[in-house]
Image 1 (tube, helix red, strand yellow):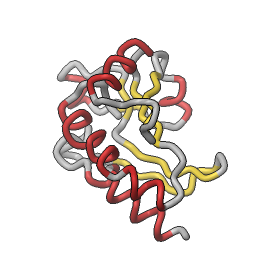
Image 2 (cartoon, rainbow, N blue to C red):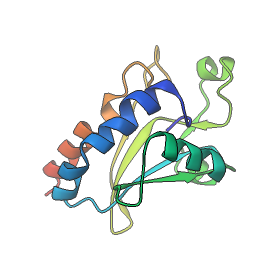
Image 3 (cartoon, rainbow, N blue to C red):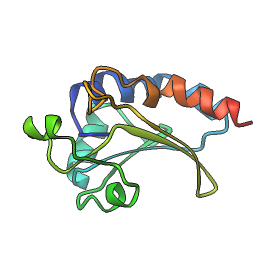
Length: 136
């Protein structure tokens, strides 16, 4: 996700995955990794804010040096978000991974919405559940 504590991430995406945990488990999902280009302390605080606990399917992780973001080719380098102070962030994306192999990639971005703030649907839980169901 582009950033911890950002409105779309905190108000739409994370709550949506929390709401769909039972459906995700039923579809065979073992874990949902949520990562941002933030340090571990920020991610821990955000997880607490989102009421993530040990029983949750969600695990929050930091990518403070952008190593994972760069390896995945998911750097958010559009000048629009950068002009608003969003430097060194990742694109709003979701991956469906099975046994270490990426089965599907979805990115929420458009020319008029490069960070996917206004239209994150492609990377939200319902869309990913559709992908999982279609791949069975």
